[in-house]
Amino acid sequence: MHSQAACADSCGGVERGSCSLPSTGGFEPICLCKSKFVGMTCLTSVGDCGTDGCNGGGVCGSDSVCSCYDGYAGTHCETITCQDNCTVSTHPVSGVSSANGRCSASAGCICKDGFSGAQCNVECPSRCHGHGECTDGACTCRDGYGDYDCSKLVMDTYAEVLMGGLQGFYPVLLVTLVALMALILFCLVGYVVNRWRGRFGTAAIPMWEYYAKTWRNAPLFEPIFAVSAATQTPPPPKQANAPLGRSSRASRANLP
Image (cartoon, rainbow, N blue to C red; front, side, top):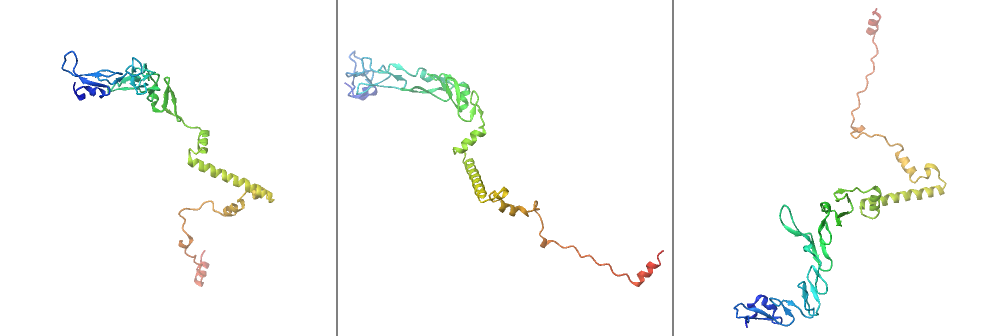
């Protein structure tokens, strides 16, 4: 007998096996597995999961039920759900290998963006540029993107923008619409009330008289750099003509 530490993985512990020299006379200690445990280090449990255990795709628990590893399914983990490890591919430039998805024991391959198929071996055009979902090799674009590879921006129509504003996606537009509807409602109610009071024509329009009086004498154009009258220099007064004297009349009489 040797100590448990002398064997690899300590033979899974004393409850699974013991470390000892082989009966053939070798000097390398080996694990002698107890009942219901097999393997070089006694880590595989057979238990009541059957003679095949969990087929190397899982671990037999204390309740005699196989707990399958990722990529395996079935009562005895006999079904491989992720063949080719969800399609491992190598980057043509960097040479780094990576899978096109991750393996789930319950759902199989869960593909990365831009890949589809049971083993994630179908690539969508340009991997949908990251703007869509890849389904059976075709892109399903997210809102705002279009074309076969989701590479183009799609402008919303006026109706879509209006509906987005009413739904609160555009707060400024929503506030503007509410203010506009409130103004229209005020004008309609005011017009009905003024008609009921006996007003007609423009007199029935709410606030018409107020704005008419305010704007009636308003100048159409006010110069921005106009100088006030208090700072303007008045022109010099005109001088009155002096009365003609006697010499002036005499000189005019001598004129031909």
